[in-house]
Image 1 (spheres, rainbow, N blue to C red):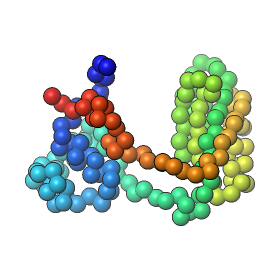
Image 2 (image 1 turned 90 degrees about the horizontal axis):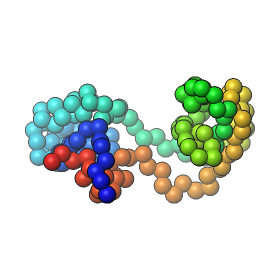
Image 3 (image 1 turned 135 degrees about the vertical axis):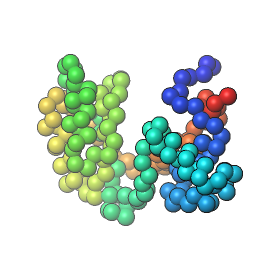
Image 4 (image 1 turned 180 degrees about the vertical axis):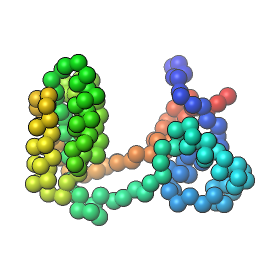
Length: 170
């Protein structure tokens, strides 16, 4: 297998810092500097560089949707009319629907995959009703998640060894 192009190469320390941030949003420079073997100022410099380079796009808390009564996770396939520029325009309109979490433009039998959470069936119906009113949306098909086996947005924790090696600088 060939090496894939990556936007930025990292060293082991970068990956250690990023892994720490992914697994623990409570940033403590003293602990982090001890963990990676660098001074606090060196870690701070690296964090700022990773932010400036667009690698770290934000620091946020992971909230448990169930604590907000958002027990229903819905995955909706959306088929649209294929006209020039439809993907960007339609995708933006779908993304702006209240309640929508994720929008993916796809190739295959459907054009977009949309995920959203709701507290009850009425809210599910409201989101779907709004989706079908978007100009160009032809059809939707929804799947209701019965059990969330794995829902993990971490990048480094889910990379294979080969993927990690591809981003390490020589």
